Length: 356
Image (cartoon, rainbow, N blue to C red; front, side):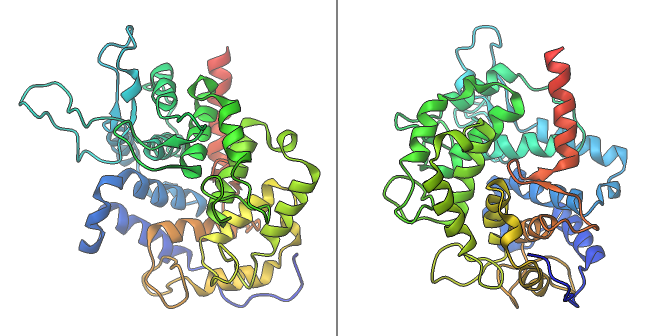
């Protein structure tokens, strides 16, 4: 809860803006292994700039070229009316697999959407003010539906991948953004989430797995987006879940018992507590001090731990953790969709147009 004792450290806002801009233009060689997930990295940086209230660093030409680049990663149906190839639709993480194997103009057999990239692609378009008019909503929803497994979970891509709670969340977020829940069997997804509750009331990646701050967020946020959070969990489960999440605060937050605190969990666990209606019970000052001590005041960015190298994901989530505490220098963040309330308001205006 807030107290009157101030934290002396200041947010190095200008440094963080420059950090995100650098990472959008050029990344170090050691980041080359993330080439296939460029869209997620762009989301971290652009959404981070949005939280910093600094999207005005993009002029109109840069904004348009970024939007066009994102749409260039969209796998669209070859036959929009037939629907026989809709299961491949979605956003790719980069153009790595966007090539023809036989020299023709036909898409590569490896060209298919990735569920996380579909979520981050749509979210980034919304943050940049796009109206999603170039999105074939029915095809994208079909692409999500094709990834749901028999047990209710989702895998990331049609070619196969691990299937767990992370992708359940991404599927729920995409369905919410598109306002089309035909993209999943909701009851199957809810059952998968409920089967993944641990003995201590946190959520694991799947049934019989250890509870974890990140997957607990994915489970709770997915239920919230589905409108199922208050109806499918009992009072005992909700209170146990609240207790488990609150117990993750040491100074900042840890992801599991007996683990060190980590910048990202100030968002993952903090946003979960927001959705559960008990965020006011945390120690604001300790959380803020931990977050600000993990920022690099020389080059900008936040790191996983104090005195470590910064990276875009922890910078974005560190700022998200600060924004949850209603920092006046930052945009408010919606805890369920993990984007600014400003971008969410834009999405809701699009929803109204779709319904009219």
